[in-house]
Length: 144
Image (cartoon, rainbow, N blue to C red; front, side, top):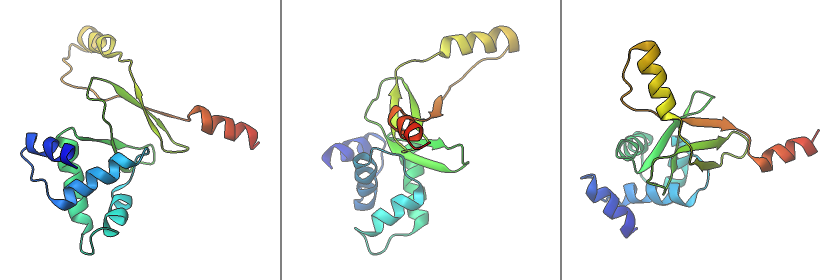
C-alpha cells in the first residue's frame, strides 16, 4: 500500500483508504474490471461507498497514468493496473479478460502516414489490440 501512496503523492492526490483499496483491487486482478465490478469488490471492504465515488477515483487514477482505461468492443469502459511504465501497448483477450503488454509500437509509421498523407500532426496515441489469447483459442478449438 505504501507503493500506491507514493504514486498518489506524485499526482497530488490524497492517499485515502478507498483510493488505496481501488489500486489494491486492480493490482491483484490480472484481468480488466468494469467500474461496477470494482464497486462490488470495494463494498466488501467499506460498507458505505457509492458508485459515483468509484467512477471519480478510477478517472483520477487513469488521468494520472496509474491505471489504464480502455473502451472494449462491447462499448463499455474497463480499467486495469499495469506496472510497466515504459512505452508500450496492450493485447486484450476478450475471452478470459487478461491483459498482456505489447512491446511493439508502430507509432513512427502512423505519424509519417498522418504527416505525409493528411498534412496533420499526431499529439498522442493509444493502441489496444483485442483478440483471443492462446489458452482461450485452444479451448475454443477443443470445444467445437
